[in-house]
Length: 450
Image 1 (cartoon, rainbow, N blue to C red):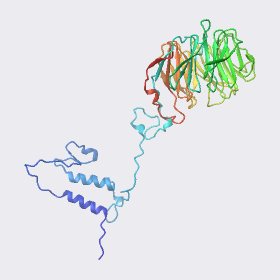
Image 2 (image 1 turned 45 degrees about the vertical axis):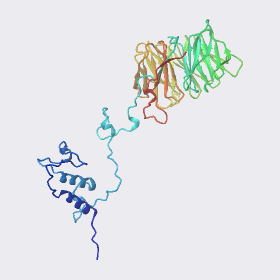
Image 3 (image 1 turned 135 degrees about the vertical axis):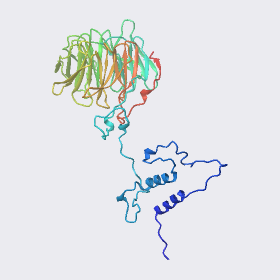
Image 4 (image 1 turned 135 degrees about the horizontal axis):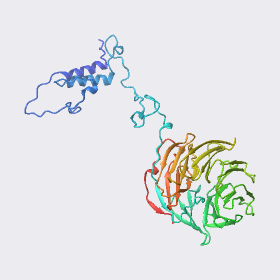
């Protein structure tokens, strides 16, 4: 005798019909408890499930409708076969969530219109508006033409304070006094060599000292300038120094001579120096409002730019585009300008409405940061090439004259005449460019660098 085949839906319908059968009335002396899976239906929103609410609660019918819809889907004519049973085969099949854009829950409205999801790369990146660390830096000079802060590849920060240089280890927070120039001299600039083991120190007497930071020993003192040395830039074994005497000296630390060549062209103090990432071009800025570009062997500038109307201290080469140079002007100029040194063209400019003190590109993303003086003392993170503002950071009460970037490219340190150094997390890491950094979300307190 053949055993009849009973479908799964038939079994479920039997269970549902059994639940719908009338039950005896409870005794008045016994407490009435609701279904433990659905405790109370008195506050339910029936309209949410397209269910009609009448005076009598049809619990079993509603439950049967919801259970059947959850297991077999909505009952539509095209989903029924000739026997009246559902032909759905998705009962135990994995079903992905509806592809709904999370941005639809965001208070920021996308310009792409409804139904269009923004890719993570287009999402607004958040930057902490507060520094995660503040160091007191007594005697940090409020002088636009000096460069007193630099961060090494070994994660050590060098700071010139008065006539001394201090080293702050970012890993251990240990502070070390590297040198004391004495009462008759003062520190005007500091610059780490590429490997981060040797530090160049420019002095007010016109000398340049080379220090082995790992041993705490001075290895060399070089002369050649008549006045203070406010700008330093390394290119492998070549050290360039810019002075108030209007000259730039090229020094090869492998040679016995104090300098191997002298670059002339500026009519006032040289306050900005930066080598390009390929070490082929040197950019210099001066108090004569001029921006010059030199090659490895020239003693006269190969490119001259005179569009700025104030001193040019802020200089930065792009690590992403060969020959892309950014420069910033002082109080009377307030502009950031971009140049293509390969084609010798002025690309664009933007008025920042404030004195531009420093510029630096992110090596992880195509963004740059600028620090400012009169009159807002702010720090601005820009998206290039649109030059849209990603973040504006405030906190310094004096001009933000000093800027350096950590070796991982994520953190900057800024210094000002308010005698503080402030650390900010502003750039993403290379591996997580679209995620928010959590390091800067916590304030670790305020300490002193000496």
